[in-house]
Length: 176
Image (cartoon, rainbow, N blue to C red):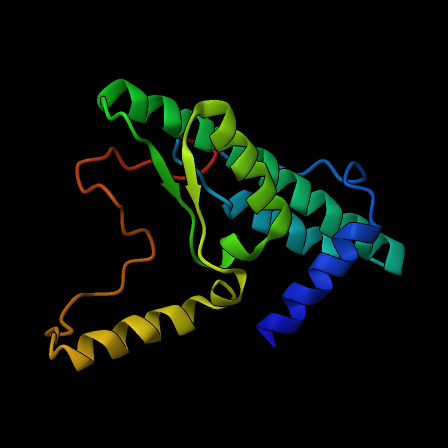
């Protein structure tokens, strides 16, 4: 089901006008390289409830794609800058994985950004990027084979930070 929705989005965004809908970009100009899609998801839901034509579907998909690209471009560029200021490595690598790595337009945009910023971009083959659940299951299988088991006592955390020392920022109302 998720795969079919992704295929439809790819088809729709190619036929739509990416400038039809001006969508929100939460914390776009705040929060360093932190990002949030909460307000964007809400806007998409509201607009989609009023869509009457196929053309409007195409336009919303294209506008959504454009907005995501803009957010990822800007926040990745900021992240590169912050990384450069804190680290002095000769070789800089940027790895993109998961479902987002399957999006060809985002992939192309990030590859170009890496070239601009002198980073090596690394992406898994597209056929391995479609479903995060499958990737997590594969990691579980590999850990099982190695007899690496966890106690499973970690609580679910929808906003689990990559850096436990980072300042928590939430949504568009962030004040810095």
